[in-house]
Image 1: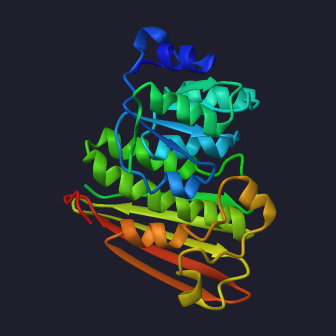
Image 2 (image 1 turned 90 degrees about the vertical axis):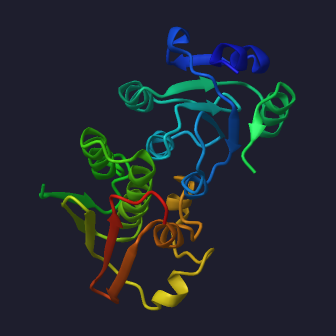
Length: 114
Length: 143
């Protein structure tokens, strides 16, 4: 699924990234616990999280995650956005809860890792 | 090829936590190291770097690289660990609420390092500090 479609399914908003270089996302992992995210081994992964701080971006960098979805319209600081842009990480936010966003994406064909 | 790098880490400085790991990741990518190996290296290093920020007053990260192995030593000045065996257990943590708010402190860091490292030695002196020595073979993707 492309980022554009993810935004469409979730009524989401692209915070940074580019639809032109839109990578395909096949799997998703939902967590607010960054150590948990660091245990995951999967390519083309979407991180769904309610944790919005610089370490969320850093964790994605270390885990080779190219796309983060912030649920409940969490605020993304300018520092987070700058770092994500530097690293080529796409950021999306949506108004839905983590449960609802995960459910909608699952229904739309995004696969779980486990 | 033999390279050495050193980074200073400040306790409590979550703004810069991960900077050293990020630099090492970029360097390994430039050197053409296998991406699976890079991930194992940076997961170890990042968890250990966050541990210094979360628990210690300050620390130094030394990274030594040759053609076969990356050796990382993270030495901190801090409260130390009284019971290392207990600290290595999944789920055990003494992290503050502030650290947990950053998405860490669930007692997964040291087990994560252990799972990804080829060699992992932890020594600590309560009241003085903790030292982690982590080595990863650059030529084998599997643990």
